[in-house]
Amino acid sequence: MRQLPGRIPQAPSRHRSRRRGLAALAGVLLGPLLAGVGSPAAVAAEPGLAPCPAALSGQATCYRGQDTNGAHYMIAVPGDWNGSLVMHAHGGPDLTEGSDPERSPDDLERWSVMVREGYAWAGSAYRRGGYGTRMAAEDTENLRRLFVERFGRPQRTFVHGQSWGGNVAAKVAEIYGNGRNSPYDGVLLTSGVLAGGSRGYDYRVDLRVVYQYYCHNHPRPSEPQYPLWMGLRKTSTMTADGLRGRLRECTGYDAKPEDRTPEQQRNLDDILAVTKIPERTLESHLRFATFTFRDIVHNRLGGRNPFGNRNVRYSGSHDDRALNAGVERFSADRSAVRDLSFDSDVTGAVSIPVLTVHAIDDPTAFVEQEAAYRGSLEGARADKYLVQTFTRESEHSGLSIAEYANAVSALSAWVRTGAKPTAASVAASCPAFAAAYGTGCFHDPGFVPADYASRVYPRPGASHWPVLTAAQERALARRGGVGIAP
Image (cartoon, rainbow, N blue to C red; front, side, top):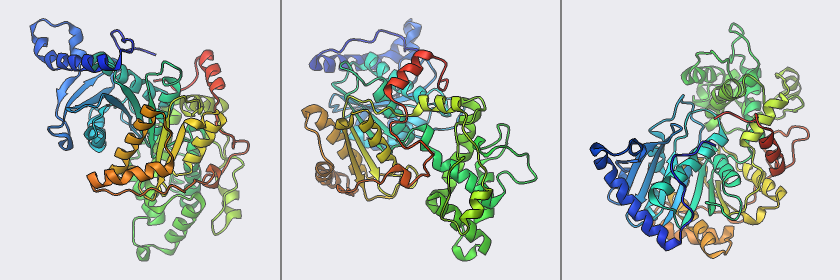
């Protein structure tokens, strides 16, 4: 891994760390002033002062910068800093060519509650767009090291991942957070994509082929044909608007039911029934199965196919026999599966506390992903480090602000005291935060997610968790030349 310049200090005592952090903070404030009077070139890499989101006005000092790999980032340090740091791993993946300088400021605004609760916050936009879970984990760790270099080592460091960022944060914990000298103290995963890459997108593979069976317009018969596991031809100029138009043409998904033709309504009913995808997120899932699949296949795997549906038996349509006889079938390339698995599948080998929060009716990252994640930690005999909580909400990226504040507080208390919380205790502590933020708490302490295979068609021989064991991951790492290039 390419490291950031400068020495990474050893962990100081907690009191000395805080004093050192404040001194370093003063140095950063002076940095831009000194740059004009003969400062070394390295000062140019210092994070620069930047406006904070409106929600943090007068409450924090914010900084922006770009690391040596090109990843833009943002840091916020509250005036009443409690000494702990939250490293944020964002979702997506975005499909920009380079690092998006506006991504981290947007994320800070969305999760400003953590800074308002007294935590320093740092988020990387990653060095490029496109798929790359280990790359994103490395960029997150690089930013943590940069924070330590500039502000001193925090008393405690947590990593928070949202959506695909949950996959990223889970890999941060496994790659950089294991062992007695872990720089991370705990993990918060919210609305996480936790089944990994090699199985976590199977339902979108199914959507891609089922959609084409009914709609015949992606591609159209008059257009160049390609295997659907590509998502899209590499050189296609299709846009999101163009895809939306084809989906509308086939299903009338965004029209009132009375304005759809009978054929559109039947197509829509069949697609939703077979794939179990909610109607309101049908378009976003199809976008992923089109544009992100293209990125994974063409840009990350050299045109190799990591997806398969050869023996899947689809059900729920008005004519399952015809569907299964006519849907496109294909088998995955083993080397492509290996590389995608090494990049993104979780091993479950964690040694620090992990708290998850997931909406039961999440329409994007289905709650059954949590069953897969628990299975991975159980398979690694690390489930003692896991507490999972669930809420009666129906959004993917918009959980209650009070729940985010409560979750990071519960994780911090677990790390600080060693007393493992329960779903019930997390639910019980939330109303105090709801009173402060006025957004409510919706926990369901008794909920247990169904098995992953109950929501996503299982592939033969692919029901065990974890998909990739820690020993297999180490063997692949020693082998070299596997995975997805950063």
